[in-house]
Amino acid sequence: MQHLDSFSSTCLTLTDDGSLVPVDELEGLYLYWCSGTGETPVGTPALLESLAGLGAEPVQQDGVDYVEGLVLTGDVVADFILEHDFVGAWGVPTRWDVDALPAIATAS
Image 1: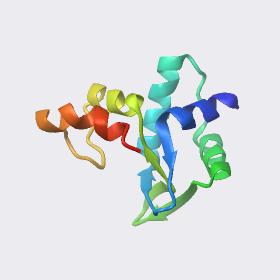
Image 2: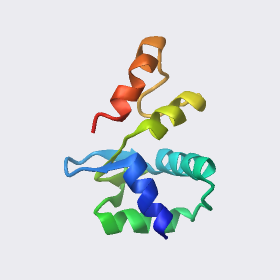
Image 3: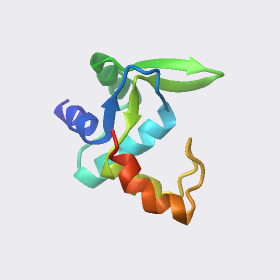
């Protein structure tokens, strides 16, 4: 599934610092990316398997499913946050935070 490689290179950065991304946030971003590119999304197991092949492994902490070893990055991430009244790990962005989102999302 070549489009998973494109999604990964556009929206994710692999890390070895123990970074965690909640699976529900990853799924939401992936579906958003697919809607913007016209790709047909695969199921969550196939997405997680693809990421595991890159070195990002599913883990569970305190009953929450995460993927360890990646961070969400890029312009699509900033657009996703701004367009979806996102209240994820970063909380609700204030106007000050919103201005910085493109720089934060592309910092890695």
